[in-house]
Length: 116
Image (tube, rainbow, N blue to C red; front, side):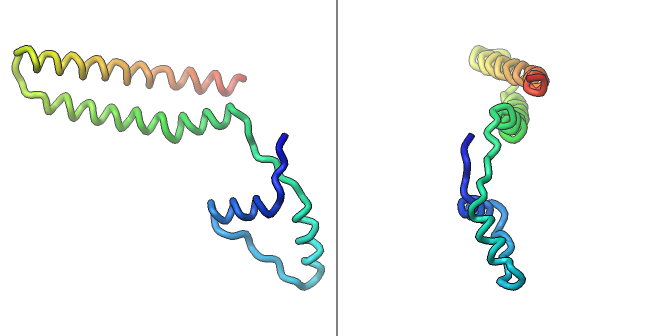
């Protein structure tokens, strides 16, 4: 397991959520600060959580946005039955099928990640 010094944790946390509260120098807090600097913190590197976060934050949003875009493209295709329009509709339908299949697999992947 990897250990991270307290100073690195402070720097990273200030980038993400703002600076950590400063310690006052009264009542032995300087000793507490020195003790904290020697502490090591281990980041959570579990792959299951990283994949789960990626699915929730990126993949689902992209699939939802893609579905909306495909609907917009489908409605923008002019009516008619000639060759190029028919080809365009067939391609959009194929993309919609892939989008639907991808969305159907997401719950299965989530369940698998929770079991392991």
